[in-house]
Length: 68
Image (tube, rainbow, N blue to C red; front, side, top):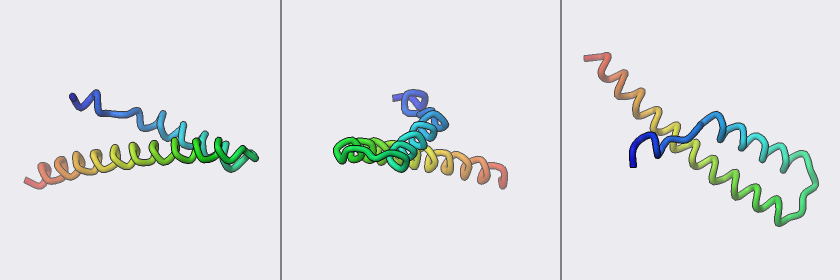
């Protein structure tokens, strides 16, 4: 897979996560719906963490290259 195929739209995913949090916090939802939203939010968090780690690696390479 290319880098583009692996990339995610960070801002879009973060916005979706915010929407999930608002739904869970703001409403009295049936338990099964709350669990479904929680699971979906957890998956998004993992994706976002992965994207941040990749960005950190790229920045470390840039900083290392600049020092040389």
